[in-house]
Amino acid sequence: MRIPYSPTLRLRRLAAELKQGRERSGLTVSQAGKALGWTASKISKIETTETRRITAGDLDKMMDLYKVHEPSKRQAMHALARDARERGWWSKYKEIFGSQALPDFEAEASVIKSFQALAIPGLLETREYAEAVFRGGRYTSPGEIERRVEARITRQEILTKVNPVHLRLVIDEAALRRTIGSPDVMADQLRYMLHMAELPNIDIQVLPFSAGSHAALVAPFSILEFPDHLAPPIAHVDAVTDSVFFEEPDEVSRYNATFGDIQGTALSTTQSAQFIAEVLKTLEEDA
Image (cartoon, rainbow, N blue to C red; front, side, top):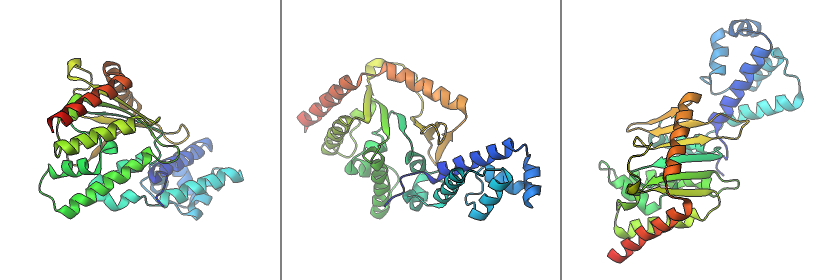
């Protein structure tokens, strides 16, 4: 069974709780380290999540020093530490997802707002479409392509799990018009999108060519939001060699503003479904 939570977010939450506990106790990093017989660097690395594994013994010592005595609070923090030590299914695909795995954050996101311009987003791709996308790059062995496809398809489980993520997608018309694989593959892909658009947790809007210039004439991006108690929202942008995450509030705010602008410019979800159906009909007639 796959882990239904994000070890990285659990670690960040634990680190934040420990930092707040130290600050409430009126201790500096150096003072806390001295009281525990540790270096200030050890405290700092725990609070900044550079230390990914916090032992139960060390956690108890920190909570004792910070006067965290409530049993339920201590149990909750130990649970965070245990969850943070787990490895998600995506850890075996590190060469695909990069050093910061997007699925790690997706696992516990409550809302994902995404703008895609050139291709159907990975969370809504069919297996055949995804395979065709990967074949469009540099030559890669069939085995490696299959591995990448499996990783991409596995990501999609967040859309149909219990308490699924709410996906709000704005997709440029170009992604619908570009035939990836073959007309049959593309037609199946559009049918799948229409099927997924019927789910209550998925909203798809099309940004048509007729909209002209718009606020997102930049790289595709996603904004991930989490339950209030867990973590603040982050923005994600795919780069050629790796993923880039933006976490500063002002940076995420700019991406949110841009997404709001293009949502207002795009067709409604009902109009978008009709638009996709028309593109599909054209594909079927040309087949």
